[in-house]
Amino acid sequence: MTGLLLLGAVLLLSTAAGLAHRSRSGKVRSSVPEGSLVPLLAELGEAPGERATLLQFSSAFCAPCRATRRVLGEVVELVQGVAHVEVDAEQHLDVVRRLGILKTPTTLVLDAAGREVKRASGQPRKADVLAALGQALP
Amino acid sequence: MIDPRGLRFAAWATTLVLAVVLLTSSTWLLAAQAVVFALGTRGANPYALFWRRFLKRTQPAELEDARPPRFAQLVGLVFAVVGVLGFAAGAPLVGLLATAGALAAAFLNAAFGICLGCELYLIIRRTTTKGVSA
Image (tube, rainbow over all chains, first blue to last red; front, side, top):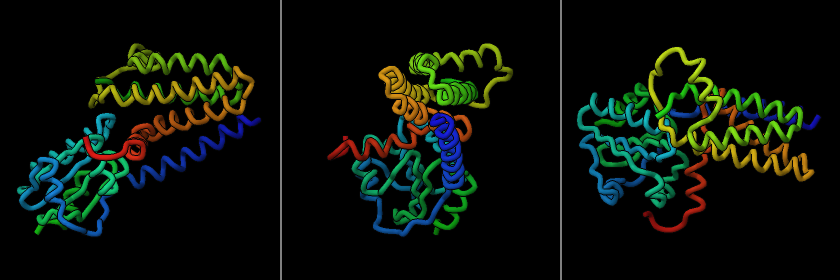
């Protein structure tokens, strides 16, 4: 009896969690722009893009990170002056904490001044990234 | 590199087996699933092998890194072992709860393609690792 109840509860809760995850994952959201992240990029040994930067946090144990890398790579090919920078989250846990990053992949869209204007956690769709860049670019 | 469709099939098979364990409290079935997980950590999940041998019809659109699912199989193995110990030690509630945990992970993976271990991995690392970056 306990087993049957548990089975029902697990399937119900997991379905709810799965649907919630599906609707949230990869959405590109607006951020409240704070300071420039250019010094942080320099710390990581990376240079910002001329017009915008796509800053992706990844980890080794992460299949959607690879898909995200491909999506952002295609975006960079399409839009001039945009750089794609990928950072290993595990190697930079202090940065991860400072920026409040909870999962990989997380992508930050930085404007020309290096300020975070958009953020997507999970694998973003190419069209959404292009739209976000459209708003971020000068 | 591995075919993600085989993994998805394996996740459904795991879901089914763990659901039966919940309904029957069968220590032996859960022990068998633990062996399946153990083989999975070595990249030889029998369900995935079965899929590849008998059900695979077409080439995959793309391949996936083999390491994340192996990590997930390890998480499943831990749950299954705790469950078997619970049932065997006369603590059926421990057995059922551990099975329920593994079932939730397998079902999320099967139905939604969510890797629970991957979702929580960074949060765990963030909270358990202190100090400066490497």
